[in-house]
Length: 327
Figure 1 (cartoon, helix red, strand yellow):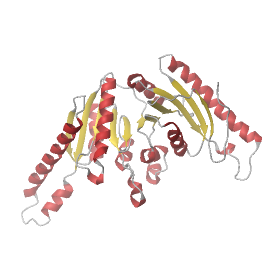
Figure 2 (figure 1 turned 90 degrees about the horizontal axis):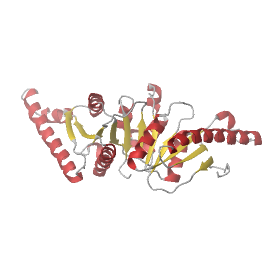
Figure 3 (figure 1 turned 120 degrees about the vertical axis):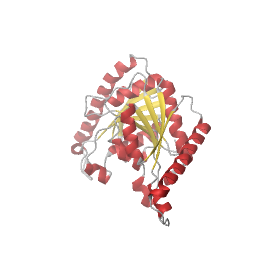
Figure 4 (figure 1 turned 90 degrees about the vertical axis):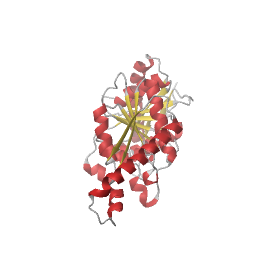
């Protein structure tokens, strides 16, 4: 039996079926405009291995059905209910094939706008263990004005967010954890712990291989060290870079000694721009999932939230799991 469709002032129109109270729930964002559903495929695949339940969720809004600010009608309201009912029928069709695999699930469809805000309201309601959404290439214009839903969710999603691409997972998945043990950019130490915890759990659940990646750029340190040098610039470069690498490797080993991942990791420490090296290594290793962090800030720094994750999203050949310190 389903709950009747309702519309409240300031609240989304929603219809829900199969409400559950399980603590480990994967919320899968279903794209109502596409036949291919990589987020559903990956979300169910993970649920089978993590012992989680699944909720399939469609959030939709059509401007021509919204009505003017001071005008609405019974026909428009009926059309909105019919739209949500149509999405629920589609979700029930998806659910039948998933239930045959033994996965416990629920479905929900809501009329809400904008999409990122509707998804966040749903997350606030159900408090999922993980959110899974597909992602597509974003144009330079959308990148420049931060208008895309994916970027908004990277910055503001209150739960771990897995952005998936339409490619299969390997039989032995390669999971990369991108950490920053020296906490450049004031990133909190607990963020690395979250990254490693998620990467470790994914590897154990999927029998995957864990790779831990860290990159540092020696250029600022070299510039600072050579400002007052009277000898040629080549003289201190090797000393500075070697000293930096020792420091960063030591910090990485201390992080791993504290965290002690159960999946034996392979370490990768490199000099250079982190986002360039990360995407290159992910391609070289044929990575399936990259786990990295995003830091929430307020005020003038808000535009830089999750900036590294945003820069690599389109260039990574694999899925991206974004976590935050308080998750």
